[in-house]
Image (cartoon, rainbow, N blue to C red):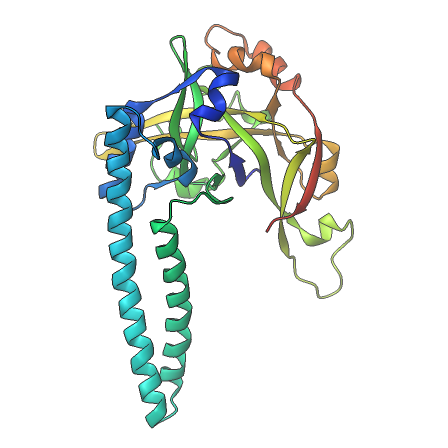
Length: 319
């Protein structure tokens, strides 16, 4: 399963190759919703589309982003002050008497102060980082869909709750950020052949078992250990990842537009590293057909998935 990826989600990097434009309406709706819903997490890389607004739509979205960051900074500042006060009080208590509680307060406060200071620096900074475009499940990122005749870069959650299913599916099926190819015409039957998207990535990450990566059995008494590997094509190249998406609605809850990356049997390099699934990298000439599935047979769409790009893939321990 692809649990994380480095995603290209800035229009200026994608327009030349795919001729896309931004979905301003959906982006504005999502950024405004985030102001009232802390559960909405949007990739910093997608926000970068609005760093230098050039029209009124972009300026409105930039204002919503700035307001969110200002509120987050205020929240972190208050929490930071509280933890610094906790630390001072605990250190004062230790000067009087050594207690387990005071020592624990020092440890916890010190850890939280470091974490909050990091968050505060990040929310105040406008400098891009390598992590800005790395996405995880439940994070909103930019994916490409076809609307009428246009390719749109639109924000969707990297976790696809199928339309019509109950909200508890998010917890009942925690792996819905990926869609197994062998289940496309069953579990994903309402999306496959109807709602297709593409995620453009530079690399992806997988959790693998250490002993599997080292091609050995578990030693006596050894517990399973997970390691995170980053897989990157060699030479570096853009990968067009086949995805499905769904628009979930409920009269009592906010709409959720989510997507899942389709996975299949892995290429040799990924299997050798100890993982048994891999996302599907479409050939560029199949992108338009994939994004316009209506009227195409399941066999034709499956043939597109089979006729994929299989680059040489290098892996390394993730930083």
